[in-house]
Length: 406
Ligand code: DI6
Ligand code: FE
Image 1: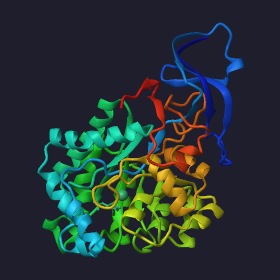
Image 2: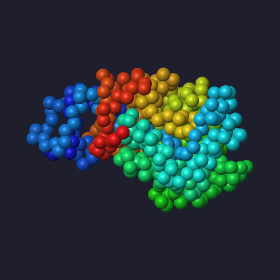
Image 3: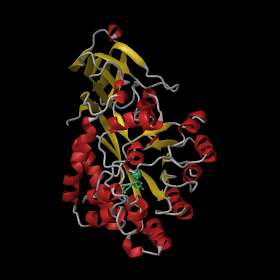
Image 4: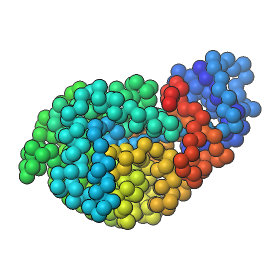
């Protein structure tokens, strides 16, 4: 047997267990051929006559699937530090948004930034995620809110992935906030999103999924439904910022459209959880935003478990509510703040995160035939990845069998 890469002297946590186990395999080895996992098993069972072009000594560490950050707004310009300071002095996120700050202030800075400036501002954020073992990142548009800038954001997102050699999935989120020039004309803006912006972005092959911010300070369920119908007409999957600050039935709406995921879900009702379970919609939990906004209402983790809704975890990396570039920290917060188990948290950034992106047959598990997206960790057990925070346990990672720098 021939292989491009042999990784040996490792333990594996395959996360390839629908029952939620670690999939532990001690004293193991893994082979990569043509960017895919070609073999894995106990080292003692390595195929006879193996010819590996390269070998990597795992130093007795743990090899897991490369992590997926399945919900980010990683491409933006400008800073919202002053606004976060205002919040610490007592102003609420909604107050700031309604007074022209919030998302709209990032939109102004982003519209003024060209592609090179956006790449330069965003690359360090991506690099930081990669140092946490991330090999797939979802990046949303939504800080342009006009056709030209939304397309620019999606192009920059794709380019970042190409330059870093990792998988980037792009989500169209023009229905993120109402641009100032459409004040009082939300329906007209949604018309523009559906008739012009989304078709233009899709025609350029820049859209993997469509998202919206369904919220009192965002768009109504009726407006969200129009965006989803436009997505469906183009054959694009949907996901939704749902029930983050109030229960508008967003998660159920996402489920009704067979959504890949409903994200945030702090205020999601049990009926909506049941709708998600029926539709196979993943709940993406975002503890960074919950923490940063000092939210007290937790997502309904118990109900999600009871109804078998897969839970993913993500950074929500964005300038206003989760200025965070550590997915490992989200594992810890998922356990501390939301009551997940370490195994649930790890599944949330691998198997279930892949599903939230429609990539469940591509990555997120260690299994023969899947992409060789791998992360190698200097830990005693993979649960340490969730139990610690601020450590930098990554020894190496590979995307499609290629070493990831960072
Ligand atoms: N919910 C969020 O947490 C982010 N977007 C959204 O719809 C926040 C975006 C921002 O404040 O810039
Ligand atoms: Fe978000």
